[in-house]
Length: 437
Image (cartoon, rainbow, N blue to C red; front, side, top):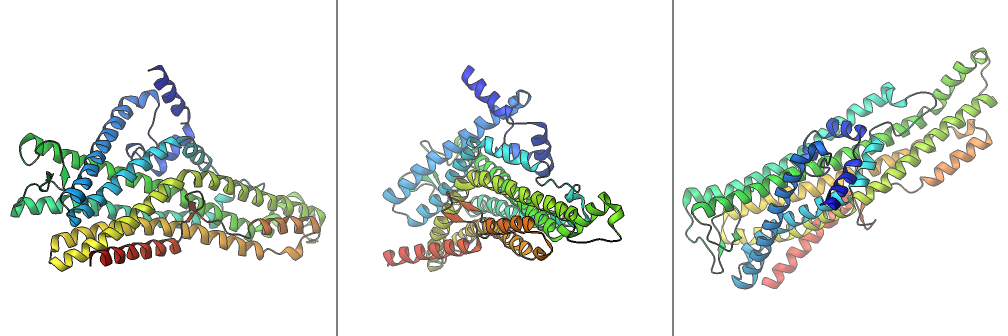
């Protein structure tokens, strides 16, 4: 017990006022409820501990039963459609559970990253650059873009609700002839599942139904919180790159402003080669270089945080889409409209998830490309030799654009990866079709 309390106190020490303000501002209660960053402060323990135990218990219970159901559907019942459907659910639930465990294991990195972006990443000697009108407009545009991105996870949750309600409602209305498969998988529940006891009626049925409702609700919480974490953080990095680009665009204008403020008597006879002016240019250029280095450090930590959850999301999506195409093909052959709609909705949610991740990663990469061109357009010919050297070193450092990656750099978060995943899923579909035929 003492060990557990020491561990909880260690986790609680990672929380601070800046982190709490950031969580409340960008995420609200969903960040805690979705267990991406639960609060372990003593005052929050009466909620956090029971909520964590309930989530873990429901996840493990459903993962175990889904694993047994997959075995029975494939080896016992030899039902490919049932196997495909249950495997879908297993992949989503298991990988979501694994991702949330990984995020909590890397809680220190998550806390460090969010603490660093809770305040201005870039600091400039001529004042707070984020308060410039252009940067304020950039921030507003990023917020609008973030809201558009967050509409996609909401569609996923809507699809999850339809997947839960549609089959069960259909069975209640028209009845279901066969309650169980020959190996004991209950077909009357919202998603077919084996239980070690009868679940087609009575209290057992409502307990099994409650378990499935809970797992869908917990999945919704975690998916929204995880996507919100990824979107908000990536968009903040994108904003920082935009601000950094703006600092390079306005390098000479801001330098002149500082110069005229420091040396008002030289305003009438301004000379761009003046040593004091060149010193100010060098000072502000170094601020931009330090800003960029801070972003690189933040992104290195961020890659460590998202590397496994994103890979799991891509693997889940590729496998589930391939299985879904196979089931859709079989449903079309049988004329089974209900199964067809069910798998179409599931695939839509999976494609939207992968597309959102890839689009955001692509947009961050585009900003690093834009930064390289902005640096290239800086008026190097109006700088003295030391400033030119600094500019050249900076240019050399950002020759290769920054790409959001997962899996320790093995997977790039780009639209090209999205296309590759869809092609892989289609290849898997063709392989299964050939084997079946």
